[in-house]
Amino acid sequence: MLRTYVRNDQYTIEIGERSRLEVPIGSDLKDEYGFGHRDRLRLEVTGDPKWSGEQGRLELVYDELADTFRAFQPITIDDSRLDSPLTSEEAALDVGANNLVACTTTTGSQYLYDGRDEFERFRETTEEIAYYQSLLENQRKTSNRIDRLYRKRTNRRDHVQDALVRDLVERLHEDDVSILYVGDITGVLSTHWSARVNEKTHNFWAYRRFINRLECVCEEYGISVKEESEAWTSQTCPECGEREETVRLADTLTCPCGFEGHADLTASESFLRQQNNEVRSMARPVYLKWNNHEWQDHHSPPSVVETMANEAYTNQSTTPSGNIALGKARND
Ligand SMILES: [Zn+2]
Image (cartoon, rainbow, N blue to C red; front, side, top):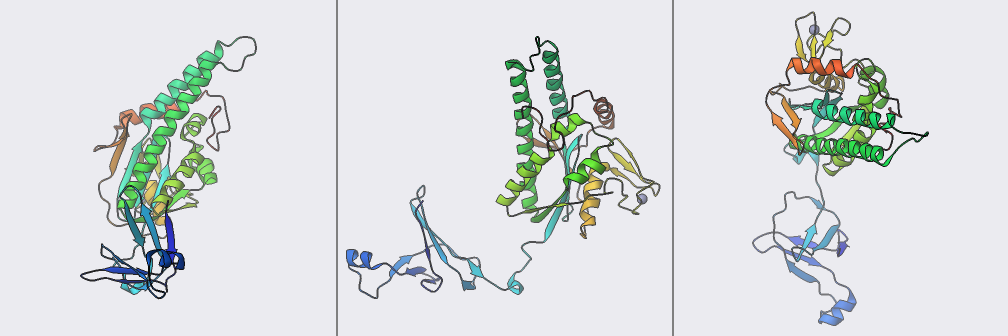
């Protein structure tokens, strides 16, 4: 790409009816095109600057597709002139098994990504792998078919996960979120998951891969990801702060004070409040389901019966253990 920079005291931009940019040119070009010694190159420019202030180094880039030169001019302005803070909203995630991600933002948005169907498919492929492993003869550890199944399982999981990350980050970007809190891995493994989720789920979810992916896409959108301890957030009542007496059954958290809410969404909300954040009044949560192609809104939460059935499933683990903590299944 053709790109050049012009020092901040070497160029001038005038914006008005006929906007123009003047930049210095080298002596070779002056000779070649017959410019005088003190002449500068004057160019017409289009577009209106959004900000004005002390000008920084100008960047000139040739855009081949549009056959156009584009100029980027950074500006330093003082904060008092910002009509609204550019970076004020925050969000927190709760990562789980039945619901892959529950998220709350300080703007009051809530998102819930349902992982039941995908987890079920992952489990089916895992069983298929176990079946073919049982047929192996003569101390063989694997076969082409088994390798293929591992790859299929991993690719599908990665696809779902990547699409989730992108869908979520785009939504957070629209909510003007600039900081996203996620549970640190030790917290996730020790306090949050161990009691209710088995090894298969860790394999399925691949937490470390998820966080890496999240960090990459967030960077694209200027959102910073912070790993914080989320201790207690999944047991805390958002109404009265009770921790010990709350009861979590399937997807519902109930408290003696009368509170009843979606357990994962409540956990993400408590996690966000724990980072000294005010959460504005809650909008209706957006429930998202994977349709083999993309994550789609559907407006009612998954039924409790369905939830209980899956809860029972995830408790009967039989998978051999792998390096679960970092989300590395074998052949990943
Ligand atoms: Zn309570």
